[in-house]
Length: 92
Image (cartoon, rainbow, N blue to C red; front, side, top):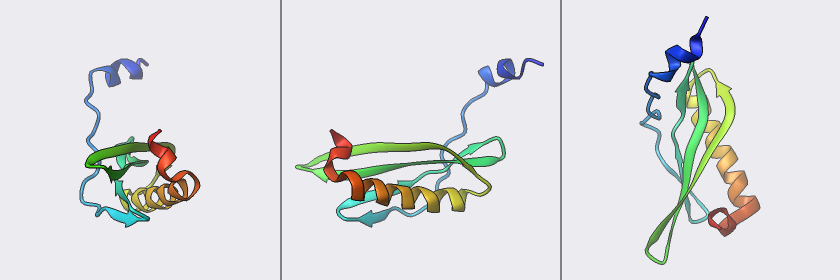
């Protein structure tokens, strides 16, 4: 009946660990699928070292996938597309 009340006190699950980062055009892509109701939400980070400063862009989408592996694979593909389209502007 009041499912939202049950979720209120529940801790969010940590991102799935164990997926290797991938380097693409000077950026590092870190897939970190988030468990969500028995599925996995597309989530991860795009990072770059610029003049000694670590820049980070969090990528999270509404996409829910049946496995962490599939969510990680799709996150890498979307991150590459974002890098192709935006490059350094990701961090502006």
